[in-house]
Image 1 (cartoon, helix red, strand yellow):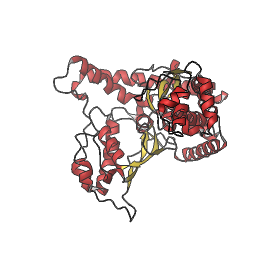
Image 2 (image 1 turned 45 degrees about the horizontal axis):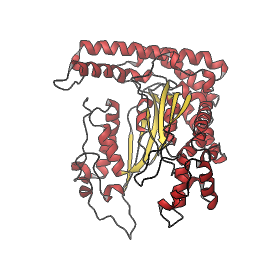
Image 3 (image 1 turned 30 degrees about the vertical axis):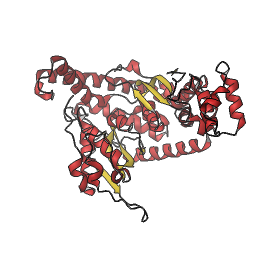
Image 4 (image 1 turned 60 degrees about the horizontal axis):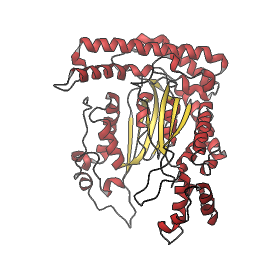
Length: 448
């Protein structure tokens, strides 16, 4: 695993700020908030050739809170090569204010050579050979099913929903995606991927602090790598990124809850779909909502249009009992509100095109390995999971954000399983907010 800092100097702003280091930018804007002189007068006192002296002079003038100025650093970009899919998932969960991208499963190596070493993940030494064996067999199952489904789709073009008049290259791409999207449930959660995020120093400090407080050695190693890079860019503000007692206590409690629930619910059988949606439309008696829901929605040309206060003020919580990790990795990136999952294996999803019975031995051995890690209380149980593992997943946000997600994840090009999950949640939402029915566009997940 390797961390690299990018774009160390922010571009000039619309206000005409010169190119400065992130911390000098933050200190200038912090001073600006405590002055009526205007930005030009403050910049006149800055020596771009000696930014450290300028920063120290400004920050010593008034006791600025590190968090309040950390958010003024602009976007600091970090690329993290070779982290596990679990760690990428976790960082997206933690860094809710970040913009980021992860390497698509369509472009990373699907082979046991693309796994971290067991010791890097905290897999107990005596279980390491079993872990390596199960993961290698999972990749073999993935590659075998991919080849079978690709050949099946090639021989039966009607299986792939290609748009009318699509060019041969598009049809070939959709056929490959048909096979990958169904075989991907065998991919190990430990598979190496790459992750790039952009966020302010304030949010990086909080992210690194939380990573450093987790029990997984991979997370703590990543915290050190990211901190070392950011110390080159924002040294004063990243001093506040060490592990902290409250973070460690909460991480320990969440792990204990996941271990207990994981032992209770562990299964390789598929779970039937169950969805839960709760809508809270309450408003203060002195500030009632006067806008009809239809008025909040009907003016949009598409899902990116502005919604009104009727949906922006409406709280929505929604959850599924059986979100496969393959889908969770993407749904987890919807940044608004809060997401929660115990990250367990309460069942194992395979699409109808793949039979559980054909992989019974692999799934039984993977289940036994996961059970052993759960029994031992090992944080490394996460790395025995495959992307077909089904876990409960809850997301709480506001109605405008839920509607956007439902329209996106059932719309053009959406993965078939996303569409099933969000379609079910949308139906529950409409049952409780029937006025929205005519103005919310449920897609058909047609290929693009």
